[in-house]
Amino acid sequence: MPIGKYLIIDPDICHGQLIFAGTRIPVQSVLTFLKMGYSMDQLLSEWPELRREAIEEAVELAAEALLERYRPALTP
Image (cartoon, rainbow, N blue to C red; front, side, top):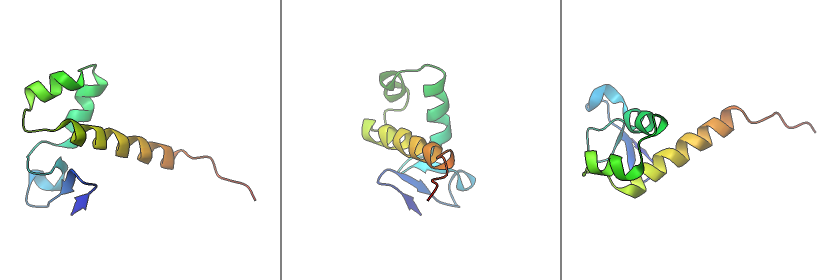
């Protein structure tokens, strides 16, 4: 199941975790390394099969999910 342009969930790959399309790299792993202070260039060096655009999409979707979850209720 595609989630955006570069992210997918496939129950037959990595136990159905959200991964980068065409890889077996869990999105959670990359986001965790970013949280720990790794730079985008370091991640691309460690995982040359990733594309900058794919990591950017993962960060963008994570931010959107966070904002959606904690969006204040609008009052009429």
